[in-house]
Amino acid sequence: MSSDGTYGEYEVVCGIEAHVQLKTKTKAFCPCPNEYGAAPNTLVCPVCLGHPGTLPVPNAEAVRLAALAGMAFDGSIRSVAHWDRKQYFYADLPKGYQITQFYEPIVEGGTLEVQMPEANGGSVKHVGIERAHLEEDAGKLTYDGDADALVDFNRAGVPLLEIVSKPDIRTPAEASQYAQELRRLVRALGVSDGNLNEGSMRCDVNVSLRKQSTEAFGTKVEVKNLNSFSSIARAVHHEAERQLALLEAGDGDAIQQETRLWDEANGVTRSARSKEGAADYRYFPEPDLPPTRIDIDAVRADLARRFEEDHTSSHDRRLPFVELPSETRRRIQSPPLNLTADTALTLCENPFGLLTFLDSTVAHLNGNEGVIRAACNYVLGDIMGHFNSSKTGESGLTVEIFAAILTLSESEELISGKTAKELLKAALAGGDVGNDEKELRQYVEDNNLAQVSDPDQITAWCREVVDANPNQLEQYRGGKTKLKGFFVGGVLKKGNANPKMIDSILVPMLDG
Image 1 (cartoon, rainbow, N blue to C red):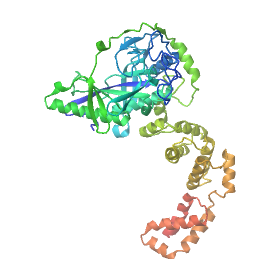
Image 2: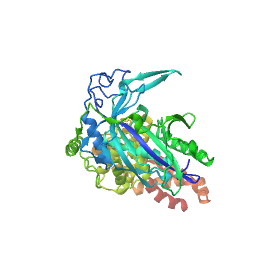
Image 3: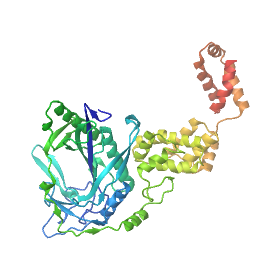
Image 4: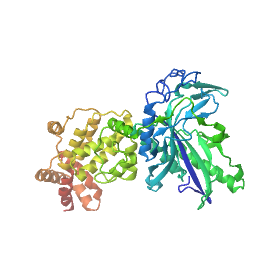
C-alpha cells in the first residue's frame, strides 16, 4: 500500500463524505424514537413514512448538535437553517424524496486536525471541511437470497449530519485516520456514538488520480459500502491502483464518474451505477418547512450547561466547555505525562475511560514525575490489559487505591514492584485491599507485604546465601555472571527484601 500517496507518476486525491447519525431521542421531523435494534418497522409513523397530508416538524436537538459539531471544527454556522427537497426513487426511501440542505448547509468551512500514527510519519494533517448539512436517513434494505429485499423503515427519518471534507487527503492511511478522528470528535461531543457496525457513522470516499505537481483533478469515483476504518484504507488503495492501471494502459477515458461498492471479501471495488449530478435530483426548497432560526449564543449556553466543566487542560480550547480530541492529545503529549503520539491516540480511542482515570490519578500524585511515569505505564499495561480481556469496562480499582499503590511502591518504596502489581491485580478483580491509602497501609501491614529495607538485615541474608553456595560463587567469579539471578532469588526467599538494595549489597560480595 502506498505510504506517500504516489502511484507511478500520479498522486491520489481523496475526499470523504461522512454520514453521522445524531444522538437524539426522536427522529429528524417526527416524534418516532431514534433507537437501534428494535423489531423491523416498529418505530414508524405517517410522517416518516410519507403519508399524504402529514407535515414534518424540525427536531431542535438535531439542529443544536449540528451546530455544536460545526463549532468544534471551526466552521461558519448559519443563523437560519433552510431546508430543501432531494427527489429520487428507491425502495428504502418511503416518501420518494429526502429532506436535506442543498443550497444553504448549516455549516460551511472548517478544519479537522488529524494526528498520523508514528508508522505513517507521525505528522499532524489538517483536512479542510467543505460543508456539513442536516438531512434525514433512509431505511435499510436486507437482501434475502438473490432476488428479494426486505425493507426496514425504522431508520427512515433518523437525523443525519453529512460532513463533507475537502479533497485534501493524499494517502490511504490519511483517509482512515481522518475517519477515525471524526469519530473521536463526534463521540467526545456527544453528537453521535459513531458505531460503524450499527451504521450510525458511514463514510463514502471520493478517489481520483492526478499527475504529481499539477492542480487539475482527475475523474473522481465514489466508493461506498465501507464498514471499517481498515476497509477505507484498502478501498482507497485498490481504487487508486485500478485507476492507475487504466491510465498507464492509455485507457483513462474508461475512468467514469460513478459509484462503486467495496467488496470486502475480494478486496476490490465493483461498479454500482453512474454518479448522478445535482440536476438529476431536482432540488428545490422544501415547501412544508419554513426556515429555522438558530440562536448561536443560546446554543452555546445550552451546551455549556450540558457538559460538566473540566479544568484538566492548560491549553486554549475552541469550545470552553469540552476538550476536543486534538486538544487532549496536545495536553497529554506535554508535561507532566509526556506521552508519545501513538500512546496519545490509543488513550483517546480507549472506550473504557482510562484517560479520565489517569487524569484523576495524576491529580492525586502532586506532580512527582517518576510516580506519574509509573502511573502511565500501569494504565497502558496492566490496567488496559485487564479491560481488554474482560471487555466489560468494570473493575474494583478506584483512583484513590491506585494512587495509594503508586505512593507506597514508587514514592516510599514500602512495597516492591511485584507486590504493587499483585495489589493492582487484586483491586481490578474486585478484591478488598482497602478504600483509601490508610486502609491500604493497614492491609499491607496485616499481610506482611512491606519490603525489608534494613541494610543490616539484607546484608545478613546476602552473606548467608553466598556462603551457602560456594560452587555457584566460583562459577560466577569464573565468568558465569548470569548466576547473579540465582543469588538474588536466594535472598528473596529469605524475606521480602528491597530489590534495589539487594543489588547494591550483593554484587560487591559476589565480586569479592
